[in-house]
Amino acid sequence: MTASKTKIYLNGRFVSEGEATVSVFDRCFLYGDGIFEGVAVWDRAPFRLQPHLDRMKDGLDYLRIPNLHTDEEWTSIIERTIEENDMDDGYLRLQISRGEGMSSIKWEPRLLRKPEPNVTVIPIPGFKDYYKGLIAEKMETGLRAMILSRPRVPSAALPSGTKHCNYLNSVLGAIEVTSAQTDIGIAVDRDGFVTEGIAYNVFAVRGGKIITSPLNRDILPGITRSVVLEIARAEGHEVHETLFDAFELGSADEVFICSTLELAVPVIEIAGRKVGEGRPGPVSRKFGRLLTETMAREAAAWHAARKLERKSA
Ligand SMILES: Cc1ncc(COP(=O)(O)O)c(C=O)c1O
Image 1 (cartoon, rainbow, N blue to C red):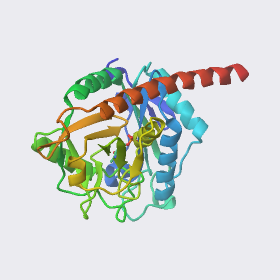
Image 2: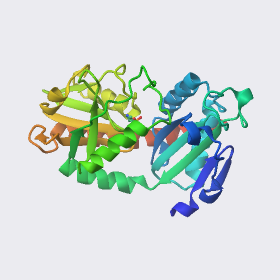
Image 3: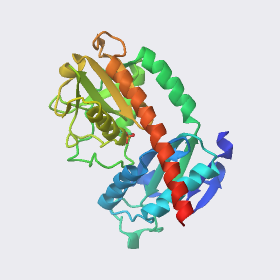
Image 4: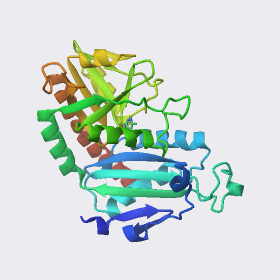
């Protein structure tokens, strides 16, 4: 489907892209004062919707932005977005800004010109081809990574557990990656420990063990990260959520990244040094495969559960 036919959810209505506008006084536009989520749609079902909603609610609560919808209402909005857009697969961007008003310190509802949050769900249909292309290609070639010059914003400054709308750290990272003509950027913190990538979590594989940074180390608690860890345990891998530096990462047998958008993709080179044999290894490939298998299985379970619910209603 073409972008012009996309139906965007905006404050209770589905509107065309041209009509999906918010005021210049929108707090997200002015201050990044909002929370967002990125949810994968696979076989017409949202993948792991509940953890995405939970992470979003935590962020909204922390920023004291009202959540206008119950989980059931959110689920219905998401299902309607998939239907309205006849979306077999893709990516949904949920975005909630505090409302509208122009003063960074006057955040309280009574001081805003529009105290109700602006709630948006933007569908990006047609990702399976992208996923297929990306996975097929990157599973073969792997990604080249650099170590970014800036650390992630420390949690002490901005809670990294929330998916807040201040992504300039990632944008600067992406600019650095493009300038260096490489594929991805991995950040280390001020102590030299690996945290996460620009928009993905990072895993090292060493002697069959799966190693990733702990959640209290300036990283987003990625939903895909949690799925990867589930798969790792189910597959009998030892899992270590622990601190490790760029040397340990670079000298691992294998490295891979994961996110809703990228799924799980092998990394073959870090800062000009080969990881392992310098080609995608068996463990990374396995996770790429098992992740999409999990998505397909859970999509089937989602539809089966909805069918049952409709029958018993
Ligand atoms: C900074 C950051 N880390 C990790 C992730 C991966 O999170 P998820 O698996 O929930 O997509 C993202 C996703 O956008 C991100 O922005």
